[in-house]
Every structure is written in C-alpha cells, then in structure tokens.
Image (spheres, rainbow, N blue to C red):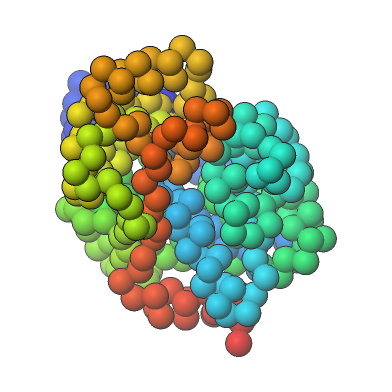
Amino acid sequence: MRPPAFWAAGPDHVAARGLAPLGAVYGDLVARRMDRPGARAGCPVLCLGNFTLGGAGKTPAALMVAALLAELGAAPAFLSRGYGGRTAGPVQVDPERHAAAEVGDEPLLLARQAPTIVSRDRPAGAALCRSLGADVIVMDDGLQNPSLVKDLSLAVVDGSAGLGNGLPFPAGPLRAPLARQWPHVGGVIVIGDGAAGERVARAAERRGLPVHRARLVREADDLAGRRCLAFAGIGYPEKFFASLAEAGAVVAGMRPFPDHHPYRERELAGLADAARRLGADLVTTEKDAVRLPPAFSAGVRILRVRLVLDDADALRRQIRDAVGAP
C-alpha cells in the first residue's frame, strides 16, 4: 500500500481523528500479541524490525548485521516471512530458481549474501536455518511476531519519516502504540538525517537504549549526466528519486508504485514507451529489479546502495554481547 498523506500530518488531522478509535483497537491487539511468549530457536536470534508499517530500511540493515556477524566468526542465516510471495515455507530461497512472486522480493536480495529461509511459521523456519548450519538467525522483519524469542531486536527508523503522526494503523503508520513496543526493543538504527528520526533517537536514549546512526551509500554508478525515467515500488519512492538526483542523473520522469508492487505487463510496456518518448534510460532499485521479468530488467539500470554505520564498533559490540561471540 502507499502511505496516505495524512499519516505525515499531525495527530489532529481530521482523518487521523476519525480513525483513531479503530487504531486504538488495532494497536492494542498487536501489542497484546507482541507480549505473548515465544519458542527458543536453539541459537541466538537477531531481529531487524520497525515500529511502523512500510519500508524503513530493514533489508539493508539485515544485510549489514549479517556482515558484522560474519566478521565475528558466526555463520548467520536469514529468516523472512517472504512478504509478497505465495510460498508458505519453510523453504530455502534459491535466486536461480525462485521468483519474487514465490518467495518475495527481499529474500531474493538476502539470499545473495547468506542462506535465506522463507517461512510464515517462524519456529519451523528457524529449525531449517539450524539444519543448514546456521549458528545465528537474522530475522528481516518480525518485531511484532512473538513466535520466536529474540536475543536482540533492533528497530530500524527512517530519519526523514520517523513515526509519522505517532498513531496506530489505520489512523497512522504505527503497528502498535509506541510505549508498548519499546519493551521489546534493544536498540534503534536511524537511517539518514531528519528531525523526525532524531525525535525517535532521543526517546530511545531516554530509555537507555543504544542508538546507531547510519546512512545509505550508493555503490559505484555511471548515472551522472544521464537522462533517466525513475520508477520504484518501495516504502518511500521519493527517497530513491532524490538519490538519483544526488547522483547527478537528469530525472526526466518519476513513476512511484506501492511497496512490493508486482509489475504487470501493461505497466512495463507503459514505462518502456514513456522512456522512449523522453529519450531516457529506465532506472530502478535492486528491490524492484528482482520483481521484473529477466528480459525487461536486462534493459533497466539499477541504483545499488548499502548501509554504512557512523560507528560500526558500537553495533558490533552490542551484537557480540547478544550472541556471545568472542
């Protein structure tokens, strides 16, 4: 879904006020669910989640955490629900065999770095991770899912978006009231600058929680000076469009789609036709690229990014303490 504009407005917006009673019920149900006891996985579990619906950078954060674990000598595996895919699992993701429609787009990206399991039943997925030799499980999303005990949960926050109007869905973007989510979090990763993200950081620090600041850095690209038609179906497409402009691209057109959007043939034909009329290259994100047919994606440029921490040692120490690594 595409976030409604009033989520970014204050809690007194007329739509937010009207939906607040429904949000209170929904938020209470999610919070009660979060409080349920979970099962032990048989190895440490690190969860990268977020307080809100929509994208905040969980997948880049999960990739970064897995890299830190590997540096510590651990053998991590990713565990994902596989949002957007039809496979219930548990199944190990094979990028050469599986498509995004089967396992979701994010697991295809994760599987390039480490063994990745898609499973709606998280304990069953954790068991498969263990059978593949994993000694640490990295959950991409799942903060609100209580079925597994987490040794460390890190909430990922978009610095520019923060928590929106601070209300639970559908009145706002929160999955549950913030006060009832804090007890389940061991730290916060704030990605990018912004007053909204800083407010969350200060709230975490008042609770004695570590705050890890990070930024998305573009991989080497040759987009400077190129005329581009940008399209993206992610949580905040506007950030992608801004990144292209920062890379020096001439953004001749922008086409936002909902997060995890399954591109249809007519939409792709429309994008190709628009690019021809504009005399522009089609450019998208890595997450979008895995949802494209191979024949189409071959003609699309991809802006690749990675997450870089301001203080990697601080997060490395917290992870070491959580998993008991040397």
